[in-house]
Amino acid sequence: MTRLTTHDIDKLDSELTQYNLSLIEKTGVDLAALASFAAGITRESFKQAAQNHMAAAVPITSGQGIIGGFSESVQSIIQFLGFDCFVTRAADVAGIAEAIDRKASIIFVADDDRFIAYNVGKGSYVDNGEATGRGYVAALAHMAKGLKGQEVLVLGAGPVGQSAVAFLKELGAWVKLFDIQPEALKAYQTDAQVTIEHSLLEALSKYQFILDATPAGGFIGADDLPHEAMLAAPGIPLGLKQEALTKYERHLIHDPLQIGVATMLAMIL
Ligand code: 2YJ
Image (tube, rainbow, N blue to C red; front, side):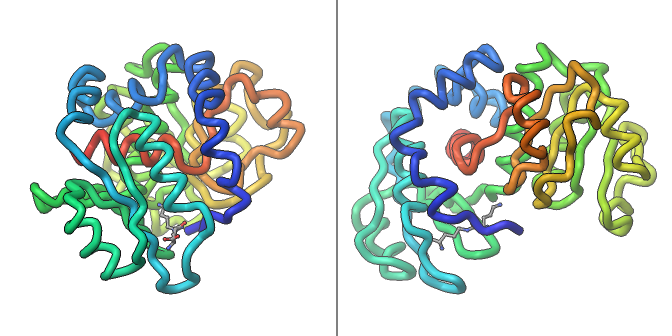
């Protein structure tokens, strides 16, 4: 799993408005609408829920430690969606205690392996991998003006890819799934809505709609994809090579944190 760096997120806060406008341009809807759709709630009820919640982001020092600006970026995204959110002064367990003392009802915490949003009242949590998979499918579905009956290539059968496959199936898409590790595909061998792809290059050339949930960077060239390709790419670093990025930028959804965090929030309410 890729670990974010400060560099990935250093402009996130100041560019959220612009980011949201570019999402609208590409998908027709904004971040709140995509997250609501991914969570299966209405945009109205998402907006409404902001009145009843206080969120907190707790920095976690374990493993490789705090990523400068990570908790603050989570806070910015949540505030951008109209919710109150604070970053705790204390880290780790003391930070969780502080969040609860200060009446947080939703707590965001991440270490090197997991990133979760915990609903204090309900005692339930949402994982970033699952939320990211759903959120990017929501973005791709809007870009494609619906995915029912469409073929969608999913690259990577890790937590994000698995969640994407599940949501694509809910939406009635035909999933084409590739992973460099064949063991990761075992669970899908008898799935009538999922076809396993064995050649990456062949698969890339065949499908218009692509969800890249791999942690691999720079493996998709400009000539590898159909001209009309649309991509949702949660993976970091980006799978597209520079020349492919230039060619497909207007039909590419890719961000370090925004869609995942927004969808975690919508799902945990
Ligand atoms: O609190 C902090 O600043 C750090 N402990 C944050 C660590 C963030 N974690 C990651 O970037 C990991 N890759 C986990 C993210 C899971 C994404 N599905």
